[in-house]
Image (tube, rainbow, N blue to C red; front, side):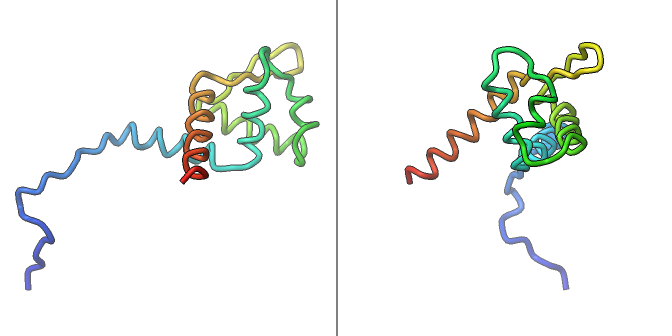
Length: 113
C-alpha cells in the first residue's frame, strides 16, 4: 500500500544550505560547553589578547583541557591566537562577541517571559 503525504503535493519545502547548516552546527557545538563559554566570556572582557596561562588560573580544569577547549573555539572561528615566544595569547573574534550577545539576549528574553 502506498503511503500518503500529510500535505498536498504542491507543498513547498524550504531549501537548506548545507554549508551554512554545517557551520551553524559547528558553532553551536563549540558554544555548548560551560568551560568554553567561560573562556569566551573572560576573553570578551579583555581589550588585549590574554595569555593562556591566565586563562588556566580562571577555570577549574588543567592546562591540557584548556588548550583543547581553545582549539575547538579557534576551529569555530570564535578566538584567534597569537604566539609570543613560547606563550599563546588569545582574543575573541567579532563572531564570538555577536554569538555571546545573541545568547545573552535569548536568555534575557526567556527570563522575561
